[in-house]
Image (cartoon, rainbow, N blue to C red; front, side, top):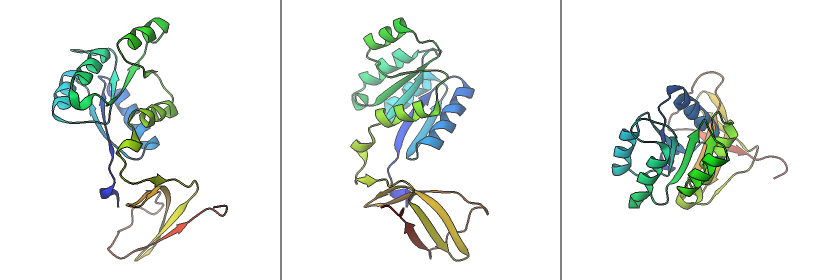
Length: 193
């Protein structure tokens, strides 16, 4: 069912391999419908932005070839990226820097190191998920699903339900089951629903 679900395309530009890993680990754990593209070169990122579209760009501030504010200006100069969300990551952030970023049009800045929830919150705000989702999606906390397979059942947690399908998080205790074309799904709503 995931193949029909559109994912938000996010370009991450940061020279530090450590921060690339932290960003990837944080976002894949906290935000379920994303397609991450991680680059360490601002030059390569500008090349990708000329050819491809993204829902959001996350950029480091101080990099070789081009800094974060310059990447922002280059991004907004391209017609197809005028509405693309932009988040600047920086290790130095005081009132002066914040004001300087704001004069350049950058209103979303996150100081490194960040909390996992902060990054996920910025992604949700800046990648405009409601604008590109084709069907209305609902989320009912604590809703579970039980997928009956040929040999046993696999429990999962529902992330979203829409007219076009469901997105589930599966936690396997006995390895990954073999999905055949024959299976049954039971949705278990919480008692208070």
